[in-house]
Length: 340
Ligand code: KG4
Ligand code: ZN
Image (cartoon, rainbow, N blue to C red; front, side, top):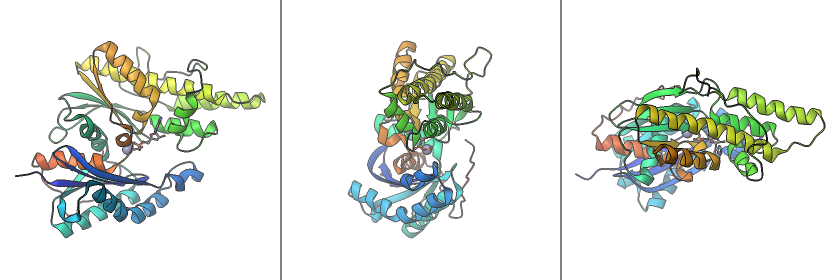
């Protein structure tokens, strides 16, 4: 029997995404973002995000179907992010997914947002090797995961950030530097003109006695804020490009050093870097360089699949459907603080 076309819906934060996947192949997708509506608040406002999902959900599903050249009647299963994420935002996506699954009488699959980020890479590079090491770096997460089979085995969580996520660090420091929101891409752009060695920002938790799999970015954020403050107090113009390049270098250094060391430690031959911060040019370049030096293969999804989207949720739904996983009941709830 042919596997179903899976519609994936993502609404955990400020992106409303819909994607269609069958047999590991991306058929079409669409994303709407409420990012601009949050810009003047300097961060995602949950109420605004939820309302934007209500506005965008149906048109985004429609756009994804149009992108794939399909209609509602072609959908054979629905996958939706149930957590972690903002509760009001998640509820909109889940309600939409339930409505579609019920109306079409097709199975519904609840998907963990981070499993979605991991699966995003399969849409570009095919099935994940078993095992692989995954570095998830986004606005909400910085985690090292040992992944075997996304549809069957639980993911082994090796470590996390103890405080801020890497993307959060970029976003917050960008604000202090006077760069626009969202900060990550703005820091990346500003860093092009800067010297990564200009400011000796710390490399948190990289000492011999530190937890090799834990991350910490709040000290780095404070160091960057203090550096900016010292310039302002002295009446000097802030060399933003140098600050951005140095911050980016520190974040990329810590992330890639730990991720590659984790691969070597566990004898894992492939590192997959996913999440919004995987879009960072220096993270990508340094990961490439260090993986090559350590004899570790590197997989990074294309930029459009790195940030939140519905295709990655559909990719997990497709794996679950093909593995014969049980569908979720129609009374399934969101799990805003879902553990892995
Ligand atoms: O995965 P994502 O879209 O949403 C979450 O699940 O958080 O990640 C968003 C994060 C934001 O913090 C954003 O600033 C960061 O990814 N980001 C970047 C870049 N593009 C997005 N950070 C650094 N450099 C980039 N080029
Ligand atoms: Zn995400």
